[in-house]
Length: 339
Ligand code: UD1
Image 1: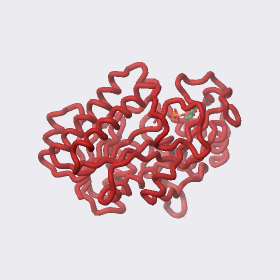
Image 2 (image 1 turned 135 degrees about the vertical axis):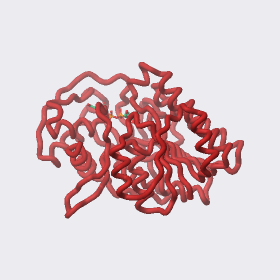
Image 3 (image 1 turned 180 degrees about the vertical axis):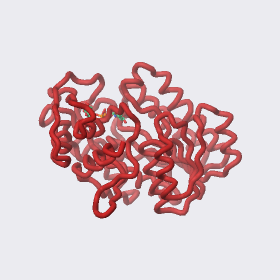
């Protein structure tokens, strides 16, 4: 099996590369433009196993086409994308070009060169701002109504994949709609949690990343964006999933597509935590206090997003291992220490 991973030097991609190297005998090629991914991450991964790295931006269509004609990939796992929601509102064309256009070209190259399987990182942002969350969370049939260009750029890519698979019968896809990915490599040395890879890109906007920076004193305070939502404590509720559980689903997806048809899967734990609960958990597991202020809501933040994950559990046999929010926070913090 010859697998191409785009964005393999980035946060989620690197955790998938790690698991491919540790648990499979697949031949792995990583493509990354290193805009947010890091060389240090690639060096760490090299200590785990062997893979080929190509420094390439997916907008370089000629080079992407050449890569596909020279290699014979069976599977593409596509992570490379821009992911900052507010930036997507200010600079939508960056998102439509980098996410939708480059993904379309990648799919085209894959189909032209006989790639059979395509695994795509989509997002819960395709669901927009649900007014009411069903008791069991949002399932894959829930209405898709993205409210920002980031979510729309991903939804459009989903559609390109679906239409392509309808027209090319031997081309199959798995689309994963990620809820809130957090935490870092669960790796112990002498019983001490010591992540080898994690979220490296500075200026990240994710809640758990920011809270771990505060716990380490890298920031002196943080803000809760809105405490007047219609939730149990008034702060936003999200379904935080550990990056290693998310990564494992991608390994399962490669096997799944050998015997099953294309499909879309939500991926989260089906349990929501509020911003206040996350901050309290970070303080508790690190034994560090920090200052927290209340600020106005961030534009476009829905009150709650929780996944219904019954489909991925049932159809793929995915069994999450790191559902403990304390471990998610602790691993993010231990990784942050190393940066
Ligand atoms: C969004 C996207 C997700 C994307 C991520 C990072 C949606 C549905 N999801 O997730 O696909 O990968 O951004 O770009 O659009 N918060 C604070 N203070 C902070 C930071 C966050 O209170 O300093 C709150 C937010 O208001 C929210 C929760 O924490 O309620 C989670 O925020 P964040 O980690 O940024 O992720 P999302 O916005 O949910």
